[in-house]
Amino acid sequence: MYPPEPWQLRGQMFLSVFLIPRGRLPQLPPVLDAAVKPLTVGGRVAVGAAWVKYEPGGVLHYQELLSAVLVHHHGRPRVSIIDIWVDSVASREGGRRLWGIPKELAEFRIDADDEPLVDASATLPGPVPPPGLPGAAPEPAAPFASALVRLKGRLPGRFPLGFSVAQALGEQVRHTPVRGRAGLRTANAAWRPDPDGPLGYLAARRPVLSLAVTDFWLTFGRTATDRARSGSPKGRAAS
Image 1 (cartoon, rainbow, N blue to C red):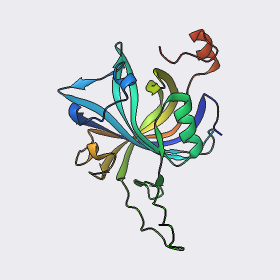
Image 2 (image 1 turned 45 degrees about the vertical axis):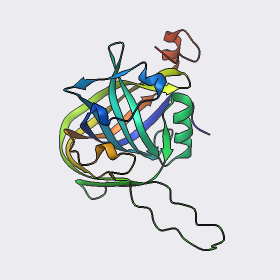
Image 3 (image 1 turned 180 degrees about the vertical axis):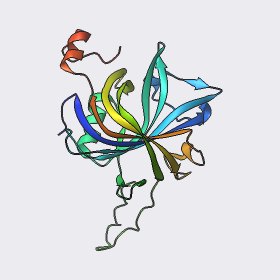
């Protein structure tokens, strides 16, 4: 139903970084909250929010919206995904079962055809018409988040990407490596999350940094070499 680990992925990402008061941050799952701590500066934590288009050429192609917090585990930096939506059942099931990533389904519009503007929105699946009303159509759902991104200058060259994602998988913390390369463009972004929606903690906040991560390729998950180094044929959930 979904590809085995690791996933080779290609695409475009439109990323913004926010500084959020610690008290506004959603609670992490208990097993994860006990293992990692958000990196805090002046009572604020760094939260990244991103629109992603995974394109043909990788093992899956789909669209995604996520938010993640920068944390540390025994002094080692990690990224923990707080909220995430995709428009692929295979991605949802694989993300949950392989790595503990709490993916949900949503409908997307990520329009990058009007260079240098990227217009993006995400909507939760609409309600089912009430029984007994054949042909009745529900009213269109309003987006729970949208953003307008203006792309700016390209930075020369391609840049290495490398980090680890820490998520709760059952009663353990799974640390998953992510590696790749990408181009970078500076950007300005105006985010419009619904204050009463699942990304309400980002409402009325301006990002401190926005970037386009262009034409990236990623290896998400443990390779055979990683598993050999860990001393286990399936790798270790915690490290």
